[in-house]
Length: 327
Image 1 (cartoon, one colour):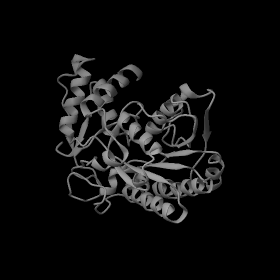
Image 2: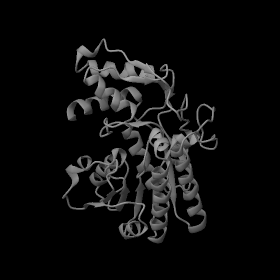
Image 3: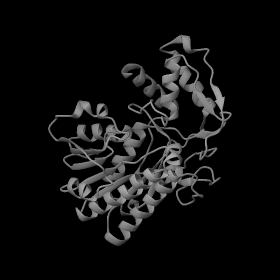
């Protein structure tokens, strides 16, 4: 990644999670002082184990729902990458209170601590779930629908608060609406595991994964390295017009769940030909799911210079290799 971003003190909330740990590794390798904050509800210490004990890397266990904790860890920080959230639409339907506490109260605490510490830039994880029941395809940032889950509500409220903190306090922020991110370190375990790692691990075990619905639902699956690129671009842009905005971060490519299954199986057969004849099982649609999600990435291209390097098939090849090498 040919971007000069070094010598900074950066704070990553949720830095032991899937996206956060990849960001931590990249920013550390760029030559920054990296502070990771995580409460380990969903983050995993093994994601950052290779960085623990190194000079200029600090792990602080704590909870962004605690305002004084946020104030303390923010001191001396140049740039914040706010990745901490309780993800998953189904989990938010099961537990809307906890989702709201972490995603809204926690985010307001981070924003408030950042403005009091005079942080230069805050880049935060927004979500494609914000588009809700909008039928517009592809999705453009200025047109959203009604949210379909508590999780979607919390992520939209985050955007409103970030814009408000910019308007009132002058906090410089950029929101990145992630579309179905996948790749190395994404947890395949648990009831709320994302579809790609879940499919990969079941096929590795020669088991049939369950596809919700008839497999025609489609998503804009986005490889982790594209997301890392977007975060660094958002943190470093000097384009005033780019600030205090939200951007779709995706590939701009639609893949149905049926196609996804076949793509993953093709990659896995490279390692284990015995998986060739495995077929999926079809179940019922999930509550809160939208049928189709495809992003326009033109705004991110124009204002941030975003240029995704991995399409879904290239990303799946890298992801499957990582799961076979590491799990």
